[in-house]
Length: 236
Ligand SMILES: [Zn+2]
Image 1 (cartoon, helix red, strand yellow):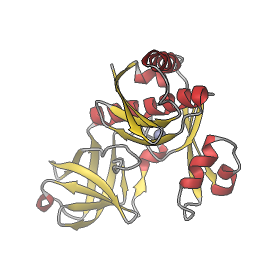
Image 2 (cartoon, rainbow, N blue to C red):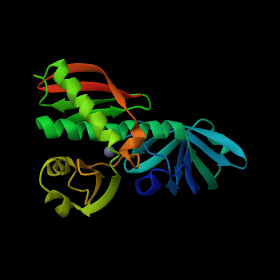
Image 3 (cartoon, rainbow, N blue to C red):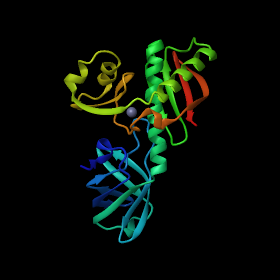
Image 4 (cartoon, helix red, strand yellow):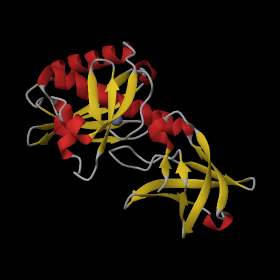
């Protein structure tokens, strides 16, 4: 199993590792800073550096619990020591948009009991599907966007803790709902807390303070049917 260093420190931009397997264009490391696409967050990219050569990592995926780094030129790599280095601009932008979605979900939940039913995070934009707001006017939505921008500006600290499943299930409210959706086989739940406004089960990467997100705009509001509204947002 690859050690997932990004879960402990999302600000690690590179690490020393060992290549433990190469299968076609799929490379396995003993530990990695690369976040594999998942939970709505797009893949990290970057390079693997070995013998002075930089080999591009085009995508990273988790398949049956194993993390695979898909590389452009696998023939240039061999088993043994390697440096794994992220495209840090891309990752930072993913972390900003990811943290932004937590703050938006928190504000809409607080005001309209909205639950998040889906999301997708890119470096330059993100979208979130929320319940409970199909009846709202554009002015009302805009007021919530403004409130979410205010919360970002309050510069809440973003912290992470891991709890045994039973403990996480006993926390009341939204967390419990989300934890119940996580497969029963998962015994440890990672909770991401944003100041005093939100705590969610999440395995993604986030900035340390909401101020790092900056401000955001709402580009589009779309009714997805079945009481779900999609918001398309972008940091500025
Ligand atoms: Zn998250």
